[in-house]
Length: 104
Image 1 (cartoon, rainbow, N blue to C red):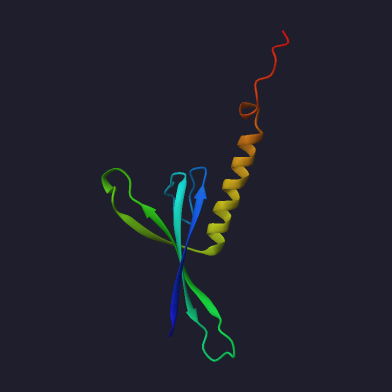
Image 2: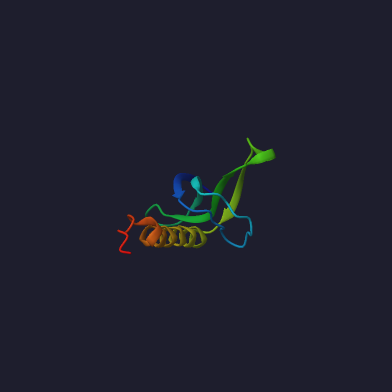
């Protein structure tokens, strides 16, 4: 079976949780590793996703360690959608706008 791995980066602007994990991860840039296997017997090359991992760098006493947290594409998309929505809400709030003139 032929396998391939692709790597990409995602930046989340807000702290987040992903999947069933209750561990809150800090905002930042994370590496995503997707593993796929070649589907045999087709007349063209096609791959099936077999695993998606979020690379999480250790903090505090675990600094220097990196763990591969298994996730799904759906969980990752959900985390990114929530991050976008939270960022839009924050940017549209009164606190994010220029100060209003004092009318009193």
